[in-house]
Structures are given as C-alpha cells and as structure tokens.
Image (tube, rainbow, N blue to C red):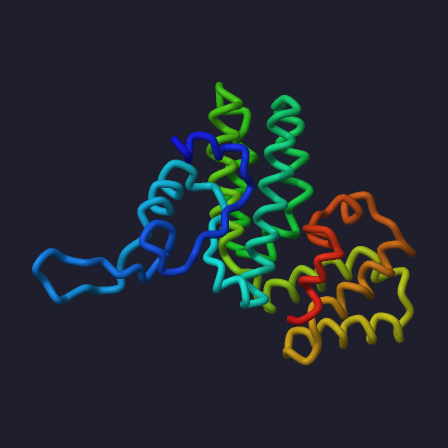
Length: 229
C-alpha cells in the first residue's frame, strides 16, 4: 500500500543494512542455522525496486562517495524532467526532443548503451502505443544512467563538443582547451575545470544543439557536485 502511493517520486534513499530498507548485504537469518549470511535485500526496498524498477534508489552511506552521489542526483533530475514531460501530454515530438537534450549525457555514461537507446528511439514510429513506448524508454533511460560516467567517456564528449567551435578558436586557445581536457583525463583536474572553459566558449560562440544539452547542467549548479572529481 505504501509503495502504491510513491509513483510520483523521482528518487529514494534507504538505510544501509536495515532489515526493511537495505539495498544489499542485509543479514539473512536462517531458522536453526548459524550460517546467517549478509546476502539479502531489505523487505521494503526489494518490493519498491520490483514495483518501480526505473526509480533511482541508493543507500544513505554510499552517498558519501562523490561519484555515486552525483550519479544518483543526476538520475533524480533526469527522471523529474521526464515525469514533467509525461504529465504535460506525451507526443512523439516531445519524446524525441527530450532524448535529443540528453544525448551528450547518455554518451558520457555508456557509449554502447547510447547507441542502443538511439536505435530504440529511431524506431518510435513502429509503436502503436505512445504510452507503452514511454514506459519502455523510461526504463532503458534510467538503466543507462546507472552506468557511472567515466573520465574516458567525459573526455570523448568534451573533445566532441570542442569541435563545434574549434574553427573560431586561435591556436593558443585550442591548445589550452585540449590540454585542460587531457589533464582532466589524467586525473589532474576536476571535471569542472574543462567544463567551465567549454561553457565560456559556448557563450562566445553559441550553437543551438549544444545550448539545449543537459550535459552542461544536469542539476542545479548550487549543488556543486562536480567540484571534487
């Protein structure tokens, strides 16, 4: 009954190792058996994830990890925007536009899954039910975003973005930007460093496709989640 009232949510934080809410390594007690292994899932969390498999769910303790925390928050804001789109009335045009806004974001998470979901969206006309398509797309979208964005994928995305205004940059500017992206790739700079310079050049040389991309602001900047990694 409780879970049935939660379909409006965009994320859920559960208590680690709790018999009701733990996501993993919950101790399972066997009757008349001392072999009580930490291999279970909390009763409530198991049912929540079964009934709402698209919902971002994370344990409180794991959110101390900056990469996991950013991934969780990014999924929450993505699902929130998708839910808003759904409530506004589904159309093929709206769904395709939504997917277009998230292309660079998805590419940063998984290149193979990015290509796979792209083929899925390209076949939208084959679906007789737009609602059925939206259900399937939501699940595929949220499954894709579970893949943590890597430095290698972020580097590829930023090098791709650089190409949009590369002709407008002089040799020194191109060298500076390429060097900053490479320093990020090597772990010498946080993502914020090359991202800030890219956004500067985007404001100088605006491009409609880049301007709409959620990749550059997947959640409110005030959360400061890209400052430490």
